[in-house]
Image 1 (tube, rainbow, N blue to C red):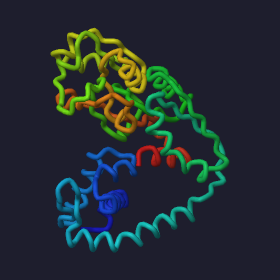
Image 2: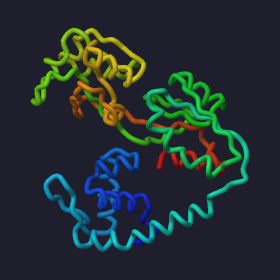
Image 3: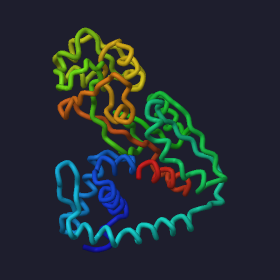
Image 4: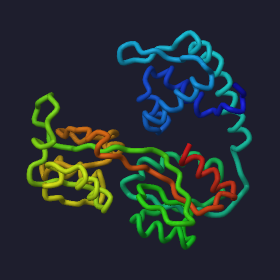
Length: 287
């Protein structure tokens, strides 16, 4: 293989999986999904032509080639981080940038911007909370530079970069049993779901107890989780939203691939990444 075929994100993913012993732990540190980390490892093994890990129960163990690669890339990655920090630690560029994020997804996107103020101390970063339709309109009018969240439809003239794909889970009050319950046993008369036509279409297509229940729509996954905790009823939520914090006394039931998934995306106007500050933000949000 050629060095040009390799990027640091694959090596970083490999390094973290090797150090943490699991893809899930590495994904949490990289703020990626487990499937995204797995894809990076698979591609790295394809490029190198060797197997880097073998499974030992639920854990991953390095193979011989994996151990040698880990020993060699540590100094390389550390040196690259020092070089980037030295070169990009300060910018005299001044200006402003505006971003819009759905309130339910701020926890996912905003931590990715933690290096912006160090890199661009003379830049003003404005963050706003918008409904999806209002954010798209503001983006099209040039009133904001980026939209972040779940956008099932992207208008012409707008580019989209998928950051993660989230499946769905069914939250319900815990009954103390450890066995996996049936959906029909969890969903009776009422079902809480995030507001939107896309979610309604998924529920209708899935059918069964989900489709026949009286649906109560709410604005965010966190609100839905709080309502479940209060005993209002079970709720459909994005798995990515609740994996980080599940209320006490609430259990999560994976709805599986049949229910589908939604992409978490960053939207921007085409040709809007020519300014270094905007390019830096885009790379931080999507890296």
